[in-house]
Amino acid sequence: MTVGRSRTFFASMLAIAFAASLQASLADEWHTTSSLTGPSKYGENFQRYDYVNPDAPKGGAHDSVVVGTFDSFNPYIVPGSPAAGLAGLYDTLMDQATDEGSVSHPLVAEAYKYPPDYSSATYRLDRRAKWHDGQPITVDDVVWSFQVLKANAPQYNRYFENVTDAVAISDREVEFHFNQKGNRELPKIIGDLVVLPKHWWEGTDASGKKRDITRPTLEPPLGSAAYKIASFKPGSEIVWQRVADYWGAKLPVKIGRENFDTQRFTYILDENAAWQAFTKGGLDDIKAENSSRRWATAYNFPAVNAGDVIKKEFKTTSPEPMQAFMLNQRRPLFQDRRVRQALTYPYDFETMNRTLFFNSNTRTQSYFQGTELASSGLPQGKELEILEKYRDKLPPELFTQEFKLPVYDSPQAERKYLKQAVDLFAQAGWVIKGGKMVNAKTGAPFKFEILGTSDTDQILSGNYIANLRKIGVDATLRIIDPSQYVNRVNNFDYDVITNVLQQSDSPGNEQRDFWSSKSADSPGSRNYSGIKDPVVDALVDRVIFATDRDDLVAATHALDRVLLWNYYTVPQYYRAVVWLAYWNKFGMPEKQPSYRGADIDSWWIDTAKEKALTAKYRGN
Image (cartoon, helix red, strand yellow):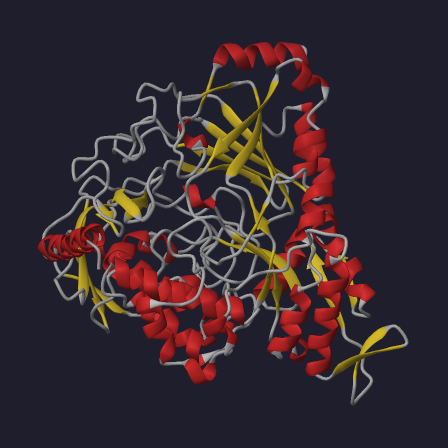
């Protein structure tokens, strides 16, 4: 070891030791900010976000269009299509930071603590917290919320799998008990628990019928957060009104935010009609653009040319989402790894990026893209040590080859990769006869359907389907309405879908919902590929129970590598920016949080700008 490397090594060891001792010293003390990645930049004295305008004016309306429909105000169960805006109805124990990853600040709970062995967590409620009917938020509400959500909400069930119970230990403190020690993330993510009003949900409606939280409802629920339902038209419109006496309005996480008096969501069944609504104004004020083609070519309508609609790009520093074709292994067709690998080769990202996406995208190479958690090269060090335990159950090339997706960088690339796909199909018992890929024994065709909701799915899959057909695979695209799509996805009724998984800087318990064998059979989970693999299950637990940051990085590298080499998905692409187009009626802080890209809750209505737009486009 050289002198320079020696100094770096010992400095690194000292830093790790310091972090471990700091974590231990933090245990069993009350904390007002939680973090999994080191101290928050604000420390324990968080006063407000540094990017907000603390004097942002309140008032005005923010109008939005939603494609689809809704039939429920209960977002915590699988049945039903929840209405837009429900995230603004209930407060959680803590509020996830907008400008830092894996950091949370006080909301319903003012502080939390945990013992050195991470066997429990205690949350202390803010005595000011209250429901919209004026009743206080109590420890009984918290305990009841935990019980009903874990029993009925699939994501909460897996997220809090190691939480055995919640117990009120005083009139302001709730203690959560865990069935395993060493889960470093669990004390912190208890703060993500949404708190529901026990007295309202256990009461009766206007007709005297007892409410049932396990069923969809269109009775506006009692809430606790900054907005409440003012009016609605089932399936077509919902209007939210800012609560004038909202109890948390002066909390640090709320200062300079949630400034609109009214938020209106209008539902439109067709995406093209939604686009036209935005260009005309009045129904949709802000367009979060996902289409590269539209961003590059379609923003030339009169309001843009007049400066009344603004295009703006917000760079992000958060982990990039994994967008991919999810191959549903609940279908026998996709249960052979060689078949899944073969289906990866016809995806020609480079041609699509050049001809369809205006070179605005980057190929996704990891389930943890954009972070130190992404695997690369060959496994080594602690990651290799973790993987060695499962060597006989893993693809041999995982240990000897760097994982690489096909690159269509020359005219010869297509022939090369399609031949590799055909060879893999042959190894799995599929051959081309009469131009069709068929099972060598039964003659059954290799045929599957990609499920989608809009013309965007045609753009995403058109080139891929064309290449698949060149090797005899009968792939088709089926477009259905959004509500039907949600129901089918929740019940895993599809062959292939395009979906997105968003990771964090500190992966943990949510990985069960993404990859575990148990979640594969649980309707509403995010295990879209139906993965049932004991090695993946073990690695998920290895991530969850990592002992420190170094251990977490190594365990996540191992999980990422195993997921990639098993070809559960066909990765697509990402872009490290948020594209927003908006009608020029807003004021906003000079800077926005780079972690998220943009925090629209920090914007406000500029009344002079809004008045000018109204006069120009609405004639009054």
